[in-house]
Length: 181
Image 1 (cartoon, helix red, strand yellow):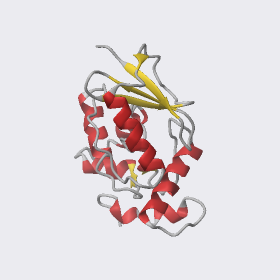
Image 2 (cartoon, rainbow, N blue to C red):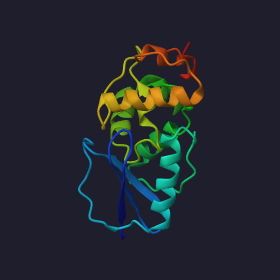
Image 3 (tube, one colour):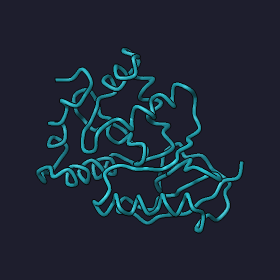
Image 4 (cartoon, rainbow, N blue to C red):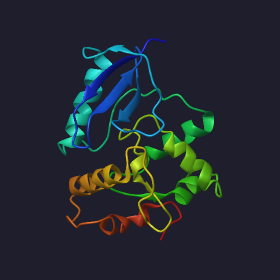
């Protein structure tokens, strides 16, 4: 299957977008951990990539709260289940790994959920940055914890949340965690 790529400048650094003929397949941050080396053709004019760029630009401008893109991430059945569930986490909310595991009916599978989360190839659009430790602490992120914090704070601003410094302002939304307080 042929892949196409383009780069988008963003507030969190350059994003590398990939698509096949009909869907977005990956978005990787500049220093993305575990990003594969993909062979792709220039896709600046590719319609899927043009639309993804437009929607991401709107998101970073604070004008878009959800994405409406055809997605085709490559992964196992379990990873696909986790990635689908990530898209159910509301803008500006956070879920714990344990809460996400409960949500998909796999209580006790927090580590497996964390592993699938870490391998999410569609950063930002499939919001793995909204998953935090059970204590509410920011944990690893393929693009780095500062990027994760920036994305969460950006989403809080879009939601009209108080502009408080640090992550504790975000963890107050833990009531959205399935099975949470």
